[in-house]
Figure 1 (cartoon, rainbow, N blue to C red):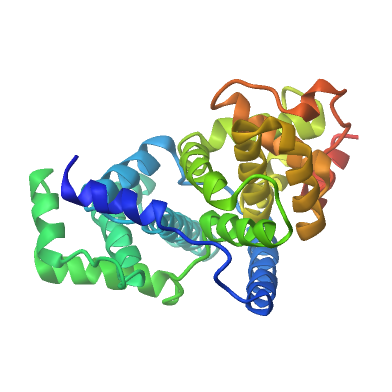
Figure 2: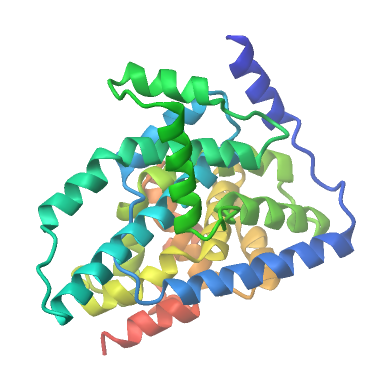
Amino acid sequence: MDGPVRSRLASLSDFQFGAVATETIEDALLHLAQQNEQAVQEAAGRRGSFRETRIVEFVFLLSEQWCLEKSVSYQAVEILERFMVKQAENMNRQATIQLREKKEAQNWKTLKEQLFNKFILRLVSCVQLASKLSFHYKIISNVTVLNFLQSLGYVHTKEELLESELDVLKSLNFQINLPTPLAYVEMLLEVLGYNGCLVPATQLHATCLTLLDLVYLLHEPIYESLLRASIENSVPSQLQGEKFVSVKEDFMLLAVGIIAASAFIQNHECWSQVVGHLQSITGIASESIAEFSYAILTHSVGANTPGRQQPVPPHLESRALRATASSNT
């Protein structure tokens, strides 16, 4: 095992829980909950997603090659997601204005080609920006980025690389320190430790990281199965799919699903206790936690959660999922 990989694994095993005062944890959890609520509200009506398997895999492999910690790879995916959504919205807005003013619209194929030709450069810029947010660990230099791009056949100058970073920053109004699901997972694990969870937080943490990778890589299949379960219909309507977009941005819901699935893998006898703790901490119904953990497990180890040994609950209980289910009636 080489040095960088060994040091990265060591950093994961050295992760400590229980070292922060409870008042600080309460404030941080409240702040995350408020951020999550805002993100869910802003996602309403948004269409499309760029968390595709090939894109996420590229970011993960690149982060691993550059020996970046896990949080950086998740941050890079989220920055890229927000940036690409902004680009798509801007293109749509531009086309709408041109149509309204009866101007000659720029060729849609040309716009897509422009976006496609710069995609790898933008993706790498997102990874580099994410690395700068975790400056205490490792920052990727411009020389490293340019050498990597050249190895793929993309020749760029340092000026073009800086312009690419600035383009991402301007598109997102310099708001790139985005919350990731990992922050929610680790915060909830911290609270579980104080609440007397029978499964050690450090033991759950490693499994949570693996499952979180899986959810990112199988984002669409997992959320599609969750949508079908919430409406009890194998063929969701377009309206139901659009309303479900906000659920995909609910990182608190994702975090409880990840932790519950990890608890079932580590010690299924303690699963109910963990779910009960998560429900009391977040206010998310146990049925919702069970459904999400089931979706994650069936796409990973193919196991059933205890919740699936009983009849499937008619609807998931989170607010966004109830709205989705009601549109089917």
